[in-house]
Image (tube, rainbow, N blue to C red):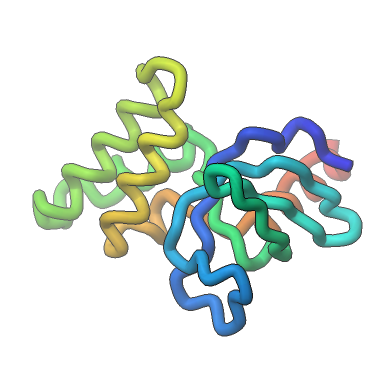
Length: 134
């Protein structure tokens, strides 16, 4: 079990091909996760749905989002830059609930998703690789 993921905001992948819960492109909170069996339970208010880790998008680490913002700052239209800047500021300086606010901004601005979101599966694999290389 992975209790440290409890309460993590996730976005159900907007292009999910099979979603029996019908929650594509909706934000929920992880209520329980067993990543070794690829079972992630996501709460949407009182309703809970089961997903695999590749069906859920999570925020990239704040440092990575900040670097992505810096990398595109001079070549990106302001309409795309503004929500990514807001996400960066929320994550670095925001109050409690900042991750949820950032996730809603990412959901509402598809153009910036690759710069601030990744699948839970990819982030889990990266964390294993980092721990293994230490």
